[in-house]
Amino acid sequence: MLYLFTLIFFLTIVFFINGIAYIFFSNSFMIEKRVKKLSENTSISNESFNERIMSPFIKNISTMFTKLISKNRYNKIKLRIESLGISKKEEVKFWIYKKNMTSILGFIIAFVFAYILNKNIINSLILSIFIFILVNVIFNFYLSRKISIRKKKIIRDLPFVLDLILVSVEAGLSFDGAINRVVDSVKSELSIEFEKTLKEIKMGIPRKKSLKNLSLRCDSKEIYSFVTSIIQADELGVSIGKVLRIEASQLRERRKQIAREKAMKAPVKMLIPLIIFVFPSIFIIILGPALINISRIFR
Image (cartoon, rainbow, N blue to C red; front, top):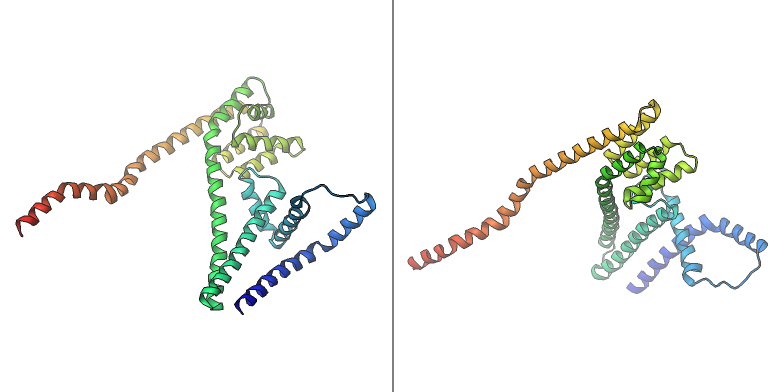
C-alpha cells in the first residue's frame, strides 16, 4: 500500500509538470514542427541524446518556471545573477530551473522518506515544506555569498583601474578608449564589467545609461560614486581627468579608513577566543598541579 501511494504521488507530480509544459509550449511546438517540415528535408540527426532530448526539455521547463514568476521578481533575480558576471538570458532561466527543481525534488524525497518512517501524512507534509523552504534559503545564501565575494574583488581592483584610466585619459585617449585600454590590459571582474559597458555603448545605448547599468550590476557605493562623477563631468563639461584624480584619492582615503576600522575592531574580536580557549588552558596549567597537591594534603 505504501509503495502504491508513493508511485501514485510521483506520477501525479510528473503528469502535473507535463500538463503545465503542454499548456505553455504545445502551440509553439506545433508551429515550429510545421515550419521545419516546410523549410527543410527530414534527415537523420547526429546530435547526442543530451542535445536532442535533455537540453530542450530543461530549456522548456526553465521557460515555464520563468513564466510562473512575476516580471518584477524576475528582474530582481536577473539583476542579482548579473552581479555574478552572468548576463545571458538562458543562464538566468537555468538558475531559476535549478533552484525550483531542487526544491521540488527535496520536497518529494522528504515527503516519501518521512511517510515511510512516520506513517503520518500531516507530519510528513510539514517536514517536506520545511525542506522546500530550506533549499530555497540555501540557494539564496549561496548566491548572496558569491555576489559578496565578487563585489569585494571589484572594490579591491577599483583604485588600480582608476589610475590606469586616469593615465590613459591624460595621455590623450578618450574615456571610451581608456576603458578599452583597461579591458585589454587588466584581467579582473571589474574589467569584465567594463567590457559589458563598452559593448552596450557600441550597440547604441547612451553612455549615461550604460554607466548606470554598470552601477546596478556591481551594486557598490564606490562604483556608484565613480559612475555619478563621470556622468556629471560629462554633462557639465568638466575635465574627466580631474574627476578621476579626485575619485582615486577619495577611494584610497576610504580604504585607509576601512583598514583603520578593522584594526580597531581586531582586539575586541580577539577577546572571544582568548576568553573561551586560551584563559581556561592557562588556568588549568597553572592551577592544576596546585589543586592536585592541595587535594593530597586534605586526604
